Image (cartoon, rainbow, N blue to C red; front, side):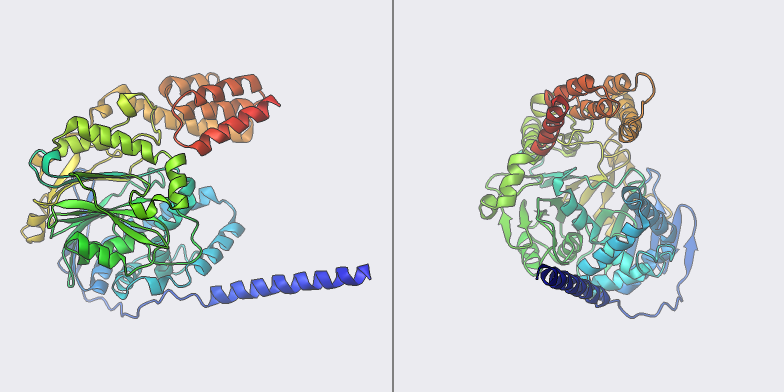
Length: 553
């Protein structure tokens, strides 16, 4: 009798497993990115050099400060095709860096194949959630993409998937390794009474990923002209301003891991920037979409002479409009609708987001009335409340020395400033959108306004900058030694402490190293030192405490 039960149980398990695999395969096989149908018959004229490319009235140039600047016009497919023709080498570089980063995280080819299967199955309906206009633009770009990475997907499939990478990355980092900071001020909070918006975009995929920063000026056949800051191949909006003085910046909030595809946040932000002229219109556009993850979308509006935050999750949406003359946005929701939300409450309790909020508020109050230089000072701040030491690269700081880009907007005058490398510490380059959109600019001359730039951070001239670079170099070596359980160079821990003595992470990695090399007393001493310093998240603190407990058993 027992053998019969065992036999039928095994048979049932096999049938269930087979059913699950069949169901998964059906989902995979039915995935549809809704690839558009366009002819790639090319009758345009392409000029291509290291620093200047033109195609049918569109142009892409490398500014003297190291920022790529691009202006495109036409219908959606024409824009995408022109982008691809002018930036094929940049698209390859960006994709290669992205794939190499994935390979460093996931070195197993078999697991990469499984990951591709999972992502395609997860994103099987992505095409339905991206409007035809943007699918056409992405398709146009894909015509110039390499086939080297076809194991991941066709060029069109890959470019579509990359537009959801920001969302999936935020969901995976909901364990949140980084966090963006943004703010807006107006009336009595600014020097001229006008609207001023600042933001750091801290999406980090390594220094190489941030190398080719791109400022795009779009003149679409439909909607408003707008400027956007991102990287080659990204048509979604991360930070941008349109000709009506409407700005859009996005900040991740804590989410449950998504279970199905929806509209990528950057695509939603793009639609808002292209088709909204005030906060009300922006909110109505957002209400038409379901998103992957939770996000705060800071909308600055010259028409409304204020800013507000659209707080959106896969389940609900709210508009947070402040009563005063400023709004600050980090990585938690602020509206009444989300105050009782479980994930948001947990995020406020356990993350560094409220701390950065308070520090930004403290800096704004101390520097008010704010001008663009003050905005840059806030975005570059590396200290904690009251100016206390946090250590270099601490997530509690507004400036964590990882930003892909930092931007300052003055919507009333359509002026914007974009940071140059490294991070937000290089000078901010000034752009006058009125002049650029008036067609008075030509790619052979400077597009920016050099005399209006914001000087680089003096931090770059001192020991702090070299210490930050040295810390990252030594940390990488020490991490490898700790993972392998092998001794590092003599004095490596002392060298690490010397360049970043106020950072909890210095002592955390040192503790890991000593533990793996069998020096448990030194490990505990380092971890206890880490806990005595500002630690950004309760999860990190709990992890260090568990390591100490394990070591003392």
